[in-house]
Amino acid sequence: MMNYKEVVVISGKGGTGKTTIVGSLASLAEEKVLTDCDVDAADLHLLLQPEIKEENEFYGGEKASIDRKICSECGLCEEMCRFGAIDNFQVDSLFCEGCRLCFNLCPEEAVSMEAEFSGHWYVSQTRYGPLVHAKLGVAAENSGKLVSRVRSKAHEIARETSARYIITDGPPGIGCPVIASMTGADLVLIVTEPTLSGFHDLERVVDAARHFNVCPLVCINKYDLHPGRSQEIEDYCKDKRIKLGGKVSFDRDVIGSIVHGLPLVEYSDGKASGEIKKIWQEILTWL
Image (cartoon, rainbow, N blue to C red; front, top):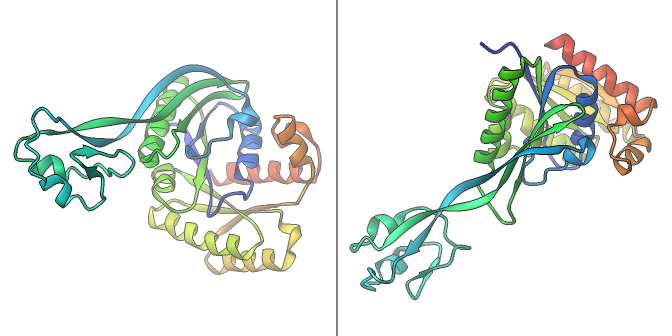
């Protein structure tokens, strides 16, 4: 039985400030496990300064390989490959999608599928608690699968340590990594900003959250830079019956906190810091 609650912080687009907010939630919450599921561009570790305790390799997919000793050079694989990955009976791993068509077609069974190394995932210790995070390799794919592995380990640690919360820094967008991050979570905090693109992407990620039956809570970051657009987002939330978790002001202390590698609520007692503390209380009230 799970006695903990999982909160995933996501955004419809990158650069909205979700990692800044997650760093502060890490400082405010008690008895938690932290997770960075933004595996394509992980940066939560920059604020939490973790000490790596466990390092694991991740193999996310497969690539075809042709054994030239067995190959009869019939040319069927090269003819049928729609990705142009086979030339002169050799596979170019950059173009191979691991679809297994050549593997299934080869009359000599000369094609094998080999696991592809895609990156690493880590279990670390921070002064805020355990952190499970990962780093996807350059041009590597299957980040949704890596996200699932990271979450699975976080749940395992939460059960072992009797944690009360899992707090996750999720990826931006609405793709596979986002779905893998929020499926089964208790709450998603959607961080948006008062811009046209921020509003548009908020609508998309709200639809995704509701499709997977996860309750959305909205935070408008830097709301005072465009009060009119912020009001439009508030009106949208009211119309869609979405709870507004809070608004965070533009604050130059955020830059200072990043430079010093500290969560904002520890670096400053300014306005934005106080507003994030109120958002955490709103999250606790909902949970």
